Image (cartoon, rainbow over all chains, first blue to last red; front, side, top):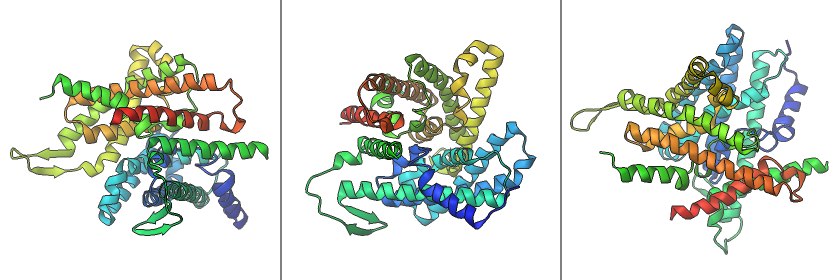
Length: 205
Length: 200
């Protein structure tokens, strides 16, 4: 059974951030990404929720996985993720109800994001629960970093500033109105161009 | 009392104005996994129509009879809607399993036709997302059924448009990196721009 070394940790972090980034390279679970990246507050909230649920559910699942039959595995995996998402939603309702109401649908979809990420990151080799948890956590960190970068770039393009929980950092004054880029058209076009550019760069290399 | 006008508004709204793929981006990640032929899009839509309306009706009944209750004066007796995610996810998993089981017993040919996509619906954002939107927006069982059917057909129509446009565009000299999902997202963006004209 594989155990965690410092070299493994650094390599997994590098993979999660760059080589196998869940959003920009593997292109997984794009629905919440498209839904929340227009506002940085939303992106950070959803990213943190995904990271916490991913880490905790991986730990729980890896502890009980040996006792599960193959047919039951997916149902248990989805149930654990849904339970943790429900708890995190209740916590967010207490912390910031307005924020919760704005992105509640995408917060619920985190259940499927977590399951999709876990299935994509599962390897055939047997690993210790702590190893699996840290590895998935590092990939989750790559997910949240990509969300934040996409959200910052979109915010700057559309408003000329980055807004974070009431604080504003203005990069430039907007001369023209880019309201079209804040719509569904903008979300899809922006992500399509970013993914296409990254893939093209990989082809060149 | 539900009227004919309400139903027509709901159908047009779900098909065009608030299309689940173009407005909420549900199921966008599965675009690449669906093969590009129209018959495959039709197969996917049939699979959706087998699952989503049933899940939608069950979800509405559970929400209306178990999750929230009012007394005669309209005062909330209890409200368990914070369990929406957990219940809808469980319902989605159960409905997919139930539909596959029933089809395997009653209509094995239909199962063979649609099973390629049916087995992926357990973790499909289109199903869960549509159920979440439906639970928040409709008020009768009939509306929940009509919403689910319209959402499935609307999703299928957009997929068909994307596959047709992509087929034409693939004959153009597009950079290799843009082929697949990036190109599909750009096409979806343009379709979303067209559909946004309905939302005036």
